[in-house]
Length: 258
Image (cartoon, rainbow, N blue to C red; front, side, top):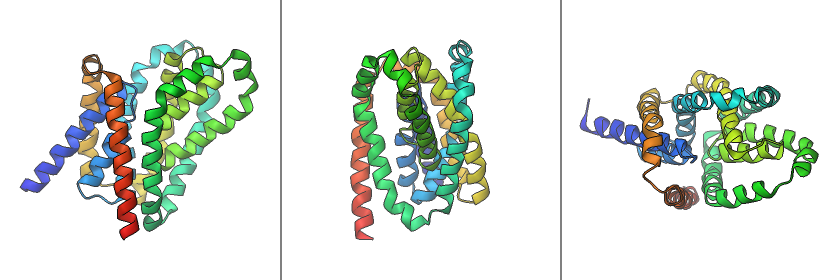
């Protein structure tokens, strides 16, 4: 193994650990993992599908931790899982048929959207907390469309889909942010499985990078709760969001000059 490849693997493992820790703290894992894949020279489309496959393990650990909360209200999972899975598969197929040069032009907007979602997360939480039960009941139709929209976005890119899913779930009447977060973990894990198969068959996945990143993410998921208690979540959230906005700016410049 060359010195460069050792360094590359090290970068991806560390990025995976950080992404796993971020995920346990309620952050957006892809906003750490995806830029790391770009940084080691993987093109945007391949980086996106590699990131999706690599973080399956992290999603599985999150869903496993959420099993007790979900058992208290299994009807919510049964209601929204088919829509989420089908929509996410549609998003994955849309991604695979998107020409690489077109995706290169789309991805700066997606990264920027993920960063802004992370910055706005406290505002979204406060607005959801003020939403009345009656308003949630009246918004069922909008929630169905919202679940489908989040599913498509999750299959296509994914960064920030967890934040969006929680927002929609709370509109459907989920009793608490904690319960909605647990249901989100289970729904998105189920939604990520078929897209991972599509990406694997497509031939775009860089498997060596996926293994390194995925291994780090599993480690991060295991140590995340301990680390999260020692690092202020607000500081972490703002730092990652600002880095994401900066990355989006860099990608805009790169696309414009190409």
